[in-house]
Every structure is written in C-alpha cells, then in structure tokens.
Image (cartoon, rainbow, N blue to C red; front, side, top):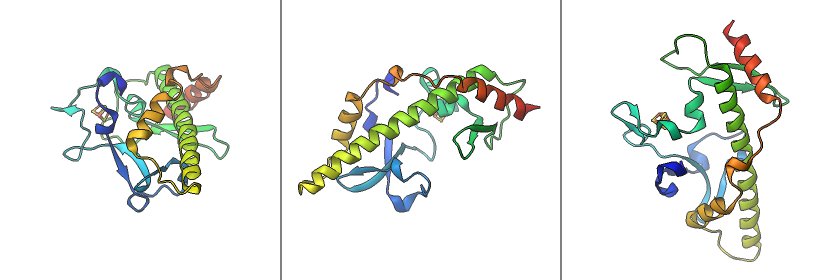
Length: 175
Ligand code: SF4
C-alpha cells in the first residue's frame, strides 16, 4: 500500500475483540492505548475504498490477498498447504489458473503475515513493559512509526520449496 502514497492510518480500521472472532489467532491483536485492536482494511460504502466504478484503482499494487483471489489456501495441522480452492467467488476465472503466479503470491503472503505477526509480538511486548512501569500503552501514530522502522518486507526471504507444494495443491484441486 506504500505505493499508493496514502497515509496508512487513513487506510485502516481498528476492531475490538468483541467485534470479530479471532479465536485461533489471538496474537494478531495489537495492544494500543484504547485496548486490544485488530487492524483491518477500512471499508467505504460497505466496500473497498479502492474500488472505483467497479474497477480496482490500485491494481498493480493491490494486496496479495486480492492478487490471489479467487483462490484460497487451507493449511494442514502442521502448517503444510493441503488444498487451494476457489474462495466462494461468484465469478470463476476462465481457463487454467496461472499456477506459478498464484503460488508465488501465496508464498509472499504467508511470509508477510509471519513477518507482521513477529512485529506485533514485539510491539505488544514493548507495551507490556510500559504497563509494568505504570505508563500508558502507545497510540496508533507510534505503532505506524514502529512498523515503518521495522525491516522492509521486500527483504523477507521466500520460503524455500513451498512454491512447489502450493503449485501441486492447486493442480490437484483443479483435476
Ligand atoms: S482488488 Fe483488492 S484493493 Fe482492489 S478494489 Fe478489489 S478489494 Fe480493493
């Protein structure tokens, strides 16, 4: 989203724990001054703010979740890719999927999510230290500054060999 030139604070909303069920992923909540919050893409007119006259206005820079659509990934208990299927899409792509492109997007998304989880863990640890010192947790401005100082996402190595697994999963799902 940095490529859009927009302020990240203007692109997101914050959900309280009672607004969303994240039972299996409690670590994704960010500890802020106003309490624990989950960062989500802000919606406008009940849709994505980048959808302009039914066209994605940030298509070359769209989030990886959008780039993989309409495919979705199910992981096994050990975190291995089990199947990649169509994610409840009302439109189904014509012709065979570009397996390597979808697999590459899924690998990059997995790496990004893991990196974000690491950053949130470090941020939350920092806020717990503040609380122990009787200081208030920091606000979203400080969070964005903290995330921006963290290592560039582009520097994250892609998981070795996983693309082959993903590609196999897509292929077997389409037979
Ligand atoms: S592809 Fe993604 S970023 Fe673009 S309009 Fe659709 S939901 Fe928004």
